[in-house]
Length: 257
Image (cartoon, rainbow, N blue to C red; front, top):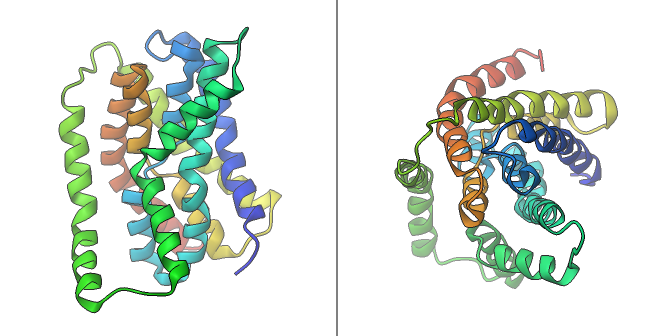
């Protein structure tokens, strides 16, 4: 184990640049330009870590990656919801920004976010040292095995209600920024900027390469901004991840990354 600061710097630093680039690029797409491109930046930054990245990393690398996974996953949602909320509020109220209003909106977003609530509940329960009854633990394991395909199916059903007409170019732009630019930047950071264990570096790059996650859709839908492009980026990006993640893991195993 080690301090998380270098890992966080590489991962979130590599995420900050695509976020800023997306905010700039979004000005050229009518569907992404709302609120300064906050929803677009969220889509280019919030990866599918809980439902896709974590099961994939554990299946490929084993339990040895639990520490770096936890370090990133535990702060991922709060950091990006804060950034997206602040981004949106600054863009919409540039002349009358209210810290209180922004804090209230952020609190409501996080207090109703299932991933954040699950992390908090799990942390609190772990501190009690009570553990779980074997029957309950087995039941939760069975539910966990079914959670990923069930969640992705439910997400796909909800996305079916949005048309991609006129959103194809912006959708592909979001996918490129999220699944190409970000992993490259995180790889450069763990390779040339910070020093972290090799396995931690692989986890950071794998996480960075994950497609846009459901929280980006929730943010876009809640604010009714850039929903077609964001939903399309999630749907198509998740399908492409079957190929891109396989290639990435092969390169890692071959020692090329």
